[in-house]
Image (cartoon, rainbow, N blue to C red; front, side):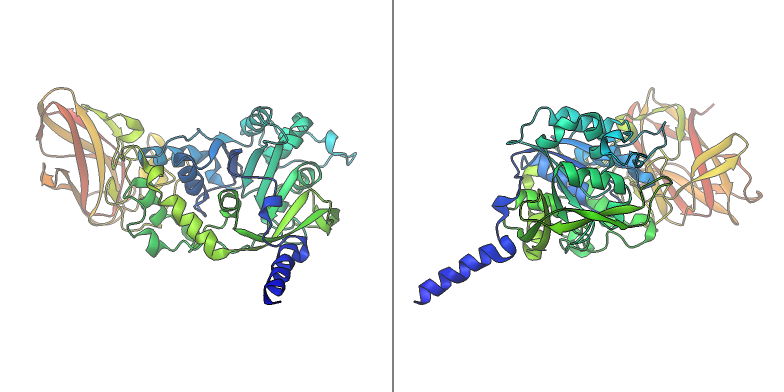
Length: 487
């Protein structure tokens, strides 16, 4: 009798709300090709997770799309390049999910109210989705995991409606009873198109994040590499995100861990409810759900949070993900600077904190136009030669490394273009912790004026060198420097 009661209880668990512990009914698995798309990766670790899974061969990463909600959207290439320098492979180059030329970031509901009359936003992201979907079948679909708006997917459907049956969308978006929330209303008309046409799985915003504290990132689970150092330093413009979790990781975790999803409900479109709009011209309503056992949309209502955390760490620390040699430091753009030659100050080496540079303020100023993943203080400054990207807010004992290729052995001097911020400052040139010059003084100058200071002579052999600009006393801006033969 006891065994019968246990069996009845187990069956009831499997059928509670029609769905508990039944992820086999969800329309995806890790064997299908995957595209990941998001509106930024400064506030989450989700792209790092996707790249680790792809590099270890646990998912077939067919594409990466950057959606346009934040200024960093076009810098996904920096994340991918950093992962490659950190030993990962099987990573596609990212593409944009919007058109810079058109300056359109959300779909506009047509006057007719008919989805087919919507004007798409033409982008490389939409084209990628169409291309990859056409390779798939309803039985072996393309899976799109997203933590942002659904613009690219909806635009792809407008351009080719036949892809819908070949695509499954898994999204971190909305609430348990609607698509209302940032990722839903950032392009609410696109949300409606996806709900009505695709197999759609929604993890509501607020689904518990995998636990990713900085203290654990600093441990020895992840190999020492530039990507790890960036994750430790990551802070979304000083607003404390990502915090202690990865808020967009749930779709990827569900893809590779069948037991992660514990409960869901099936739904369909149940009308519109008012919402905020993100871009001018955006639709001001968002879809609400109605429960429907025959619906082709799934809303996840319960997950195994502990298992999600375990799955996240298993992926990011997997030795198979770091199969290639790790380059702890690499010259800017992969090639040493030429000496003699002019070097822009922002073109310091790759490698991150403690390897390519040392910056006290890891939550420092971020210039999205260049080096957005670094914590060196970059900003724009006006000078006689125009608007320049410069190293700003230089503090005592900070430093920057530059790899140079010396064409011919000889004696050189360094001429740096600087502007004082306060009082007197000084720096020197080092190699292998050895001083090559006496301190270069920045004195007797007006604040915010630009001028050139020159070092004492130093000798360099032919070949590659890593030169360190060591700022003994900060308080100035650095625009560029030139290594020239000493006369």
